[in-house]
Image (tube, rainbow, N blue to C red; front, side):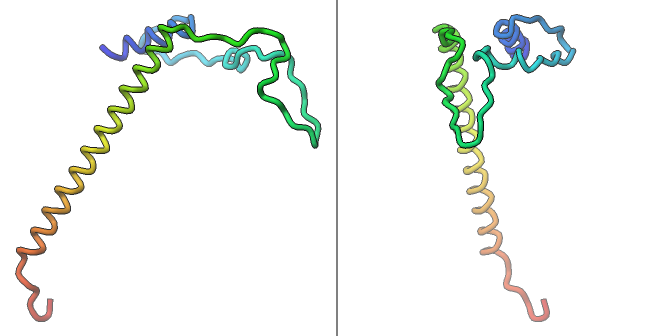
Amino acid sequence: MRWMRQLAFVQLITGRKEKAGEPPSRLAPEQLQPDAGPVVPIQSGETAEPSQNLSGAKPQTVSSDLKAELEARIADFRAHQARFNREREQYFSETLARLRAKIKDAPPPGPGK
């Protein structure tokens, strides 16, 4: 079951266990974003520098296993979307060809129709 593998993957990433069939608990805003140091308000006329790391902490690195899995998932998604687009285009072409054939083979409309 693919959904079970995906749930296990989410649990691995988040470090939390969710029970099957229950909606995931909501995360607090501080859990959604990594600690980027103190919040400094921007005065009008100033520009923010997003690369500025005020806490002095090193940026998080992604493990090679996780990166490889993410790249594989992205590649699978792109392949699926490409296949979906090809099938949609083929269906459209076939439908249009059938419609044109019916129009060509239809008798001409009579007077008053």
